[in-house]
Image (cartoon, rainbow, N blue to C red):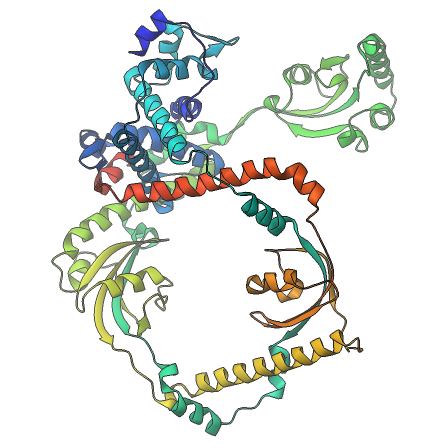
Length: 633
């Protein structure tokens, strides 16, 4: 299709598919990422990884995208990345989620009658910087060669471009020209730009606790007057087990030949290239006519250094490099790739102690002294054997973790207790929890996710696996405790503490009211305020912290007014408004159109996000997680 277009057409447009350039670059990167496919992946490649209303997302599509993301994570972590870590970070789920979202949006575009012609696909490709040279399309043969080098099938690549263009058209249709009224524009501009100069006094609840005393009789009276206030919601108690790499590490072993193989395949990780330590003097010509004079001065400085003058002093006197001048021109230790080619070529052709002739780079003229050179070095296997063994053990434990989780998942449906899951896995020891409410972290497990699962299951049921930060969890619901009001003796301290808090807060509020009256009346107060020169909505109010419920109270007051006490988490704030600024009619008139465009773009983003969320509800989506695990290894 597109090949015929290229034979017949030579037009150059301006539209570039939104994801085109990134797709090609990532595909090139993928060439250098290790192949995750093991034997199970062969079968997985024959089936899809997800379906949107029965239409499959191919395993090859998932694997290409996964490798690209994994490569980026690998680069960011300095090479410390594995399939086990990918699962722990949830990367396979993220990737398949993005592919499903893309498929849903294409389906939505088709539902709304959006089409992309072959000519539009061709124009998008032909005008992409990736496939241009000197502003002109590189031609059919070069285009195909680039796709072959990136291991991209032309038809699949062009289908992806078509999908990107359809999604862009859909977004344009959904978010087309949102209206921003003049009143809306003015009020939002005022809200974002208005600021106030304030004096803030803050009275904490803690400062009043010493003035509060609660007797047991008072606490009992409160309890008996409002027993419903102390009702405990439904609670449950569970048995649970957590499956983690640490638990399974004892079951895996690493052979010497595996360590040797890893070392051979990853030798680059243990190699340090040749490095040099050097100093330089940088001279820069102010104009082109000064070039010869600058080079001549550089040659003279080189000769002076060779005849014994202190190189560091010459650098401090003449060098234009402010970053190294005071250090005598010292550049530290670096490799060939860390400097511009002309500089590196000169440095790595010198002997220690040698001073170069003038070297020209884009920065100017350099005089270089090579202080030392270290040859390339490769760490021996014996030096890194323990490190490699630890890494391989972690990877194997991660693989075993997924394998065991899938095995146990098959047993969960018919299991009556966790004993059936752990019978063949003695390392997995179930633990029992105390009673907890929905959403509370399970004591000892440190996870609210186990609590959520426990309240989704019937009493006596077993459920899981549940993804946890450290692995997987399984739950057996032992019993439930219906909502109830505990006996006073069981919550005596809680009742006393709540009554103390209430009284201390009331005292702090009363003190705030008295302080406001004194400040408003111009009378002397004992404590100095905290001044805030420019306070905007959405920013902390000094030590009082955030006061989102009271921002309009402050900006609604006049200069000179005293407002408060305004309630915050830890106490009450009293505020004097010293000045307000930020809305100038002339400035607003000047900036209103760019600001209107900004607000319209923000509206577009909100509309699009809502549309995407709603679109996902219209389709039946199924994901084969076993295939995901098989594909990444």
